[in-house]
Every structure is written in structure tokens, then in C-alpha cells.
Image 1 (spheres, rainbow, N blue to C red):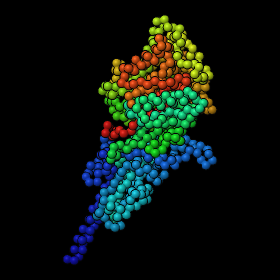
Image 2 (image 1 turned 30 degrees about the vertical axis):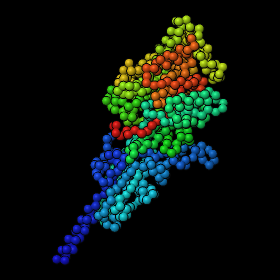
Image 3 (image 1 turned 90 degrees about the horizontal axis):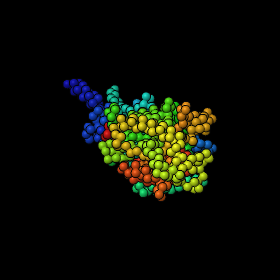
Length: 602
């Protein structure tokens, strides 16, 4: 009898020992918390789909300013070294705000010698931490939890050391396992998570900070631009100070970088981190300011590495990277809840392969490519922009209209004003760059009869019409929805030697024109090339012909924008940017609102 009781007791004891069941959870239902009381985060937690599964963040800011830019001898770090430092470049948790929560359910029916183990299937990409008290401890592959911690339940956090750069190598998905061993029994549970994509901003997201380049004492034109940009953004209702990049000859704030963000659900709304993308131009020193000046608390940087980043190719500038606001493709039915990247090819040349792979690997903003090689600089922001509108989409497309631009001058010429100066800019105010002023003294009649201007107009209109038709078919807008902005074109002074030739073994800035052709650029400052701040569009003053005390080209631009839902605010960028091949959008950049629950829009 006693023997039987002993065996029964032993069997019961063994069954209790083996009855434990590990349970690790994340915010799989995306409500910002891990449910330990119910089962809302337990259902299908080991599966990740667009509509279900936990999300985590790249913890790549520099919260304590610990990342240096040069070594002890004062020599600048290489691009790779510069980009490699961030809050996640070690095994210490510097900023807990950006870790996604993980929890294990308490397990009481285990012996005193039970052991627990936390691991992931992507240890080179992610970090997992254990919070005990106020401390966070990095969990390395050999870290063992004892029975008392398993019984209590573990409070954990996960982040990423890096971004997804090539989804063929790693697509951001990770499985975290919780393994418990008690006696001869070992059991494992898993939960699936995925790294947030990096999203480029679109124009309809509210602007929070405006960026431009600081003017030094020797650049009076840039000083005027900065002052007027500051005044215009304040009138537009943006009261945060201008973010001023260090003074440099490279004053194209738009082209140095592309602001983006990543976000995950939080208990009080989205938790987001900015990610500033350095453009794929490793021969452009000013773009290192992504890391030397902008990287910091809640702001990380990305350095593209690989094919197509060598030198300073204009095709890879930020002005050639725009974002269509959210829409559903009329051609494929695919939904783009955060918008879709829009970029330009230059005939046979495509944008940087490394950057395009990065964009595609984010999965939700797959780039649409149109032709921009007919322009000297070749950026899509030179002939189109997206503006808010009272329609089903909530936005419309503003496009350059070369024929309308030429017709403004033709009408004046036919009305007897052919001898009026085509430009009203004060030539005594500034000294233009050498070789950049041959047609500043032209009259209206000279412009409208010039074969180069006429050819440039026809060439620009043909290419713009082709691009617009592609966008209308894709987005679902009609031609009646378009805001057509008068825009006059001529041949470019940036297509010759020094711009289209290799230098020191690096590829040239620009591609030469096709045989028998020339690339085009703006005759007047391009009012299409502006920045949307609230319901204001800040763009270039035209400095067109003055007739009866009024700038007739400026009036035509104002009339065109009156059909939109924006208030246009004009500033002077003639000598600071226009004469050098760009305008307001090229000389500025924006940090926009990130509080979007993208996971609820898939």
C-alpha cells in the first residue's frame, strides 16, 4: 500500500513538473500595451501579417551626444564610421523610449532548479533587454534566468540596431523565443515581430520644422533668403525656429537629405523616431551634416552603401525624391496608406541602386519612376508638387505649364510691350556668378522670338505632359484637377564642361544631353518649386516684366495658384538659388508630423 502511494505521489509530482507552459507576448494586436490579463495578444502571436503582429523600432538616435565626428588627431571619420555610431551601437540601453515591450507570463508550477532562456532568430540585428527594478540588462545568448524570475514573469524590451536595407538579406521580421527547462522537460514559446518600415514624408503631413543653410557674412543673397524664408514660415503659422545647417557653398538643403520616420504603437499613441536619409552621394561633404548636426535625441541617420553612391550625381539628390500623398492605384488597386515615393530617371540612367533597394525593402512606398533627364539638374521637384484639395483624395497635382509661361510674354509682346525688360530683378543688387548672366538684359520681344526658348518650351511641355499622364492614370486625378503654373524654360548653362565631365575618377554631377539636344532649366524662378507649410505655399518671386506697375509673370502665377487651396507666399531666391539652378524647395527642407498610426491603415 505504501509503495503504491509513493509511486502515485511520484507520478503526480512528475506530471506537475511537466505541466508548465512558457508564454511570451508582445503587442500583437497593436493597441500599445501587452495584454497579460486576457488573450488579445496571445492569439496568433507567432504570425506576422499586415493586419496583425507586433512592431518595433530602430533605436538609432544619439540621445546623449556621444557620437564623435573625428578621431583624437582631428581627422574626420569615414562615412561608414560616422554613420555607425548611435544609441544602439553597443549593448547598453541608452533610450528606453524606443524599445517595444515583451512580457512573459508568470510560471508557478516549476521546480527551484528550472532555467529560462530568451533568444531571437536575428541576433545581429536586434537587441533584447530585461528590466529589473529601474535597470535594463542586455540579454546575450548565454544569459540564463532562474526559477524565481520565471515565476515572477519577465519584463523585456526589444529594439533594432539598424534599418532594413535589403529585404533579401533581412526583411525586419524576428521571432523571439522563451525557453524553459525544468528537469528533463524543455518547452519553448515564440512571438513574432517586425521592424517598422521607414516612411518618407508627404506634403500633407504638417510641417514642424523648416531647414535651410546658414548664411555667412560673405553671402548676402543667402542672408536675404534665410530672412525671408523665416518671415514666410512665421506668417504661415510655423513658430519653431529655423533649423540652420552649417554655412557651406553647398546650400541645397533639399538635396542633401530626405527626412523620414519609423513608428510603432504606444499606450498613448504612436511612438516615432525620425530617420534622416543621407542622399546617395558620398562625394558630397555637406550631406554628412545628417550625422554631425541633425542626429540626436529621437533623430537617427541613414548612410546608403553599395551601388550608385559614388561621387555626387544629381540624379541621387533629395530634390529628385518626392512622395505622392496616400492613394490607391487606379492601375493595380494597390493601396499606399503613407503615400508613394516618386523619383526620376535620366533616360538610361536609374537612381542609385542602393537607395532604390532601400526604398523597396520598406515595402509600403514602392517607388514610381518617371522621366526627368530632359532637365539639366534632373529633379522631379522642378516641375511638379502636391497640394491639398477638396476632393476624394484630399490632394491634387500642381505642374509646370511651359506653354502658359511663354504665352504670358507673347500676350505682352502682342500688346505693344515688346521692348520691356524681360527681367525686373535689380542687376545692381548682386553680382551674379561668372557666366550666369547673358540673357538678363533681354527684352520681352527677344525672349518670345528666341529659337532656344521656343525649343525649350516645346521640349519641356512634351516631357511634362508624358509624366503628368502617367500620374493621372496611376493616381486617378483628371486633367481638370490639375493646378497649372506658368513656367518658362530655356537651355541650361549647367550642361557644359565642369558639370558633365568626370573629375578625379568620380562620375560627373550630371549626364550630358542627348545627341542633338540640350537640357533645359528655368528662365524665371520656378514658382512650382516651393514648400508647403500649413495652408501656405512658400515659393519664388518671379521678377518678370513690369507693365503698368505690375509684374505680369508674377500675376499669372498668383492667378494659377488662386485655383488651389493654398495661400502663396513669395520670397526672393533669385541670386541665392535660382541663378545657380534651383529655387525655394531646393534650398529648404522640412521635418513633418510623425503621429500616424500606419498599422491601422493597411
